[in-house]
Length: 267
Image (cartoon, rainbow, N blue to C red):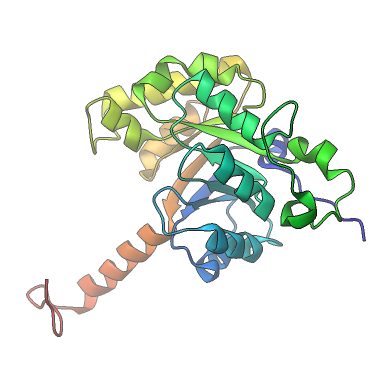
């Protein structure tokens, strides 16, 4: 039976008449991913760079989210052609590539999602969920058009090279990571420092000039609003693990005396 793949994040951004709001999915749990998928957000980012996710758990989460009206992006731990090939074969259609510092890094990411001669992706569609085991007609010829590539700007070098990165054919969007960017600027842990905010806004402006969407990570509502007003087309405003951590802490603050370390506490 011939099957059709869903539209990519690139297409969702192009069709949107407002910025798209999303959240991180970092727990590694398909159940948590499905709960987040039904929340009403526009997109989810399943993270494998700083979260306990391998191929099997990513597959399970992609399957759990499938069917809900939400876009799914996956961030691999590194810009590596072999790992990207495996993610694509799992059926991941939207990639957020971390630590892209130059146009050459961006070109490598794009090459990883394209079959030869345009790229270096290995051919295994008959064995892969990506092509639904060859049930998607003409997958090999159309694969690149079904995949979106967003590259992450998170260093001073990347900010300096942002115009060149945006000019790379096949880069659909950029996403600014203020945490690593702050560290790169010598401001570790100070994501809202004026110099970091200025660098983020520089990237947003460069993307607008290039005619490509830019996104940003911003958990503080006032900062998120500033970036949205500055032209961010998509944004991450929370994370599953952070919501659980803060929510459980609020329960403890409400019901456990401040002087009580809890039963059997040991540190």
